[in-house]
Image (tube, rainbow, N blue to C red; front, side, top):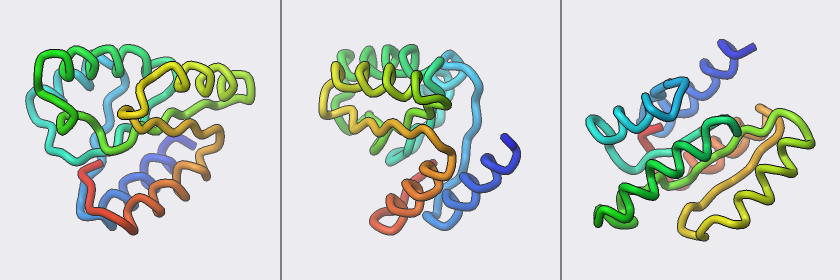
Length: 124
């Protein structure tokens, strides 16, 4: 199932003129972001890794790299109704600048990516 999801996200990224970069952990994301990231980008992240990713991005923002250093959208994958509820509550505590979207079903991710790519060219 994960391979199908990866292929779908890669396809959506190519349609937008971007590419899919897959990393499993927030530490790998932060290393990639600081070394090779090209903006704009969409961060699609699992609930387990969103907090460390956002903590890293908060440090980038606080270091003076500013709002332009942030992902265009942060999509949080919540696999169950309970996680969706927790993630949604947590997202409400974040700044509106984070532009965070919580989705429960992977089909929601495909619809969201299609909608995003209609309006802009992104490096995903």
